[in-house]
Image 1 (tube, rainbow, N blue to C red):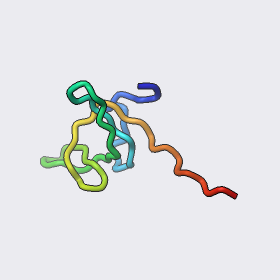
Image 2 (cartoon, rainbow, N blue to C red):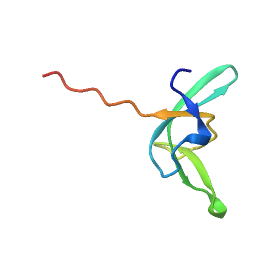
Image 3 (cartoon, rainbow, N blue to C red):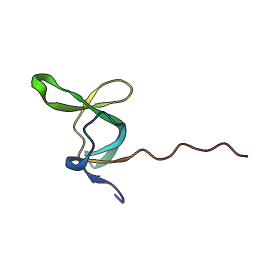
Length: 69
């Protein structure tokens, strides 16, 4: 997985990033962000939807497409 980084190095300030986790031999990719979990800890959720996730890797979001001039 080129350019993917260990989740331990991900920003924990709520920034949206791409997250990844291998499940049953396939990579699941989601847009995610950190959130305040119970007891003052940090957790990860998908965006939109706020489903709790446990990613193992992350990378910054790519730039959006630019309109043709």
